[in-house]
Image (cartoon, rainbow, N blue to C red; front, side):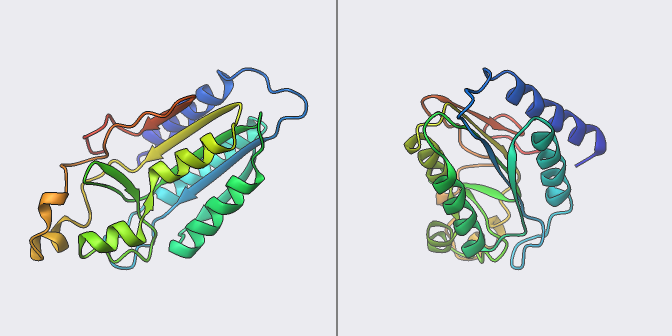
Amino acid sequence: MSPVRRTRLVSFVVFLVLTAFLAPVHAARLALVIGNDAYVHVPKLRNARADARAIAHALEDAGFKVSLALDQDRAGMNESLRRFRNNLSGGDEAVFFYAGHGVQLGGTNYLLPVDMKGNDVDNVVDDAIRLQRVLDDLAERKTRFARAIVDACRDNPLARAMNRTNQTRALQGPGLAPMTASGMLIAFSTEPGSVS
């Protein structure tokens, strides 16, 4: 990501955080920031870790306790998400940020861990992290406000492998599918269905 785009993204995150109401004294301000660059079986990325670090720094400056997770495999992402969910309580303020590969498959958005093989539909469904799971975790904890920011609207990095296995019907175009969730804001780096 270019320095100008990174600055815009950080400014956007700060705006989102600062537009929330002041937290009650007992409420925690927690954030989970994931940046995945070092993919093993799909094309590597160059800026997701740097973007995650910049967002983590901006959130810390805004008073959030940030868990920063870089280059997470499936087990690491699941553990990071579990810890984040378990640390949230009703009335807390929560921000989830993800930079890395993401795909839309059958209208469902998936976040890819760095060890994702993704050579067929079953691999994606079984091994990637459903974005809806993250949103459900935030809703289940009845947070005061929740923001999910996803910088993963890219061309599907699995399309070539799925093309070879004739499974491209499950792929639904570039970018991620639109999503809504009651009581939270979901922001993508580009509009749904577009690539960044």
